[in-house]
Image 1 (tube, rainbow, N blue to C red):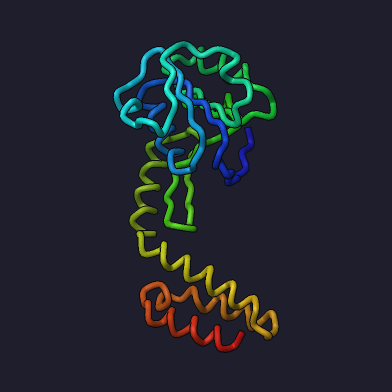
Image 2 (image 1 turned 90 degrees about the vertical axis):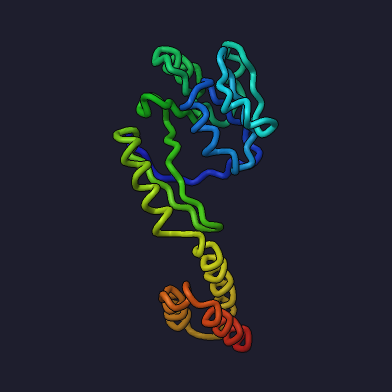
Amino acid sequence: MSYQSLMVDLKGKSILVVGGGKVAYRKVRTMLDKEAVITVIAPDISEELYALGDTVTILQREVNRTDIEGQFLIVAATSDERVNRTIANSCRDHQLVNVADHTEVGNTVIPGTVKRGQLTISVSTIGASPKLAKRIKQHLAKEYDVSYEDYVDFLSHVRNLVKKLPVEREVKDELLEEVLEERFRTSTMERERLIEQLRQQC
């Protein structure tokens, strides 16, 4: 299959995770902060999943076709390849489907994600090597540390102010390039000085 990177707003969306083990737990954890409505169904549920409490709905039983209907995203994460394929084949064409052990069976990949405020960096090997994806994610997490949260907020603020400036497009582009310099990421004083200058010019 040919995949295209795409970010989807999962807030309020119904997500079904079929499986109660470590893989299912990892999948649920990646989506917990997305404010989605997550349901987990499996005959055996791990203590890790139960420990998530009210953040997810847990049904300890076999999944059936009616569970799948109406779901925005279905994640097949059981330890049984046959069951995972059956779940994927039961989904409708308009539904998003992720199959944990065989990505090519579904139509959706859930990448590893590093999130720093408004900055989101995703990485995936499309199932070729989850361990490599994990290693790259760890590297990115160190490279783009928590300092980027405030910095990206600053960039957003600057962009909004630059849009209002009564100057040519070329000048605006130069300003937006300038704020990518390291001094603005590392110095709060530099940021405050530029913000004040832009406010005066607006």
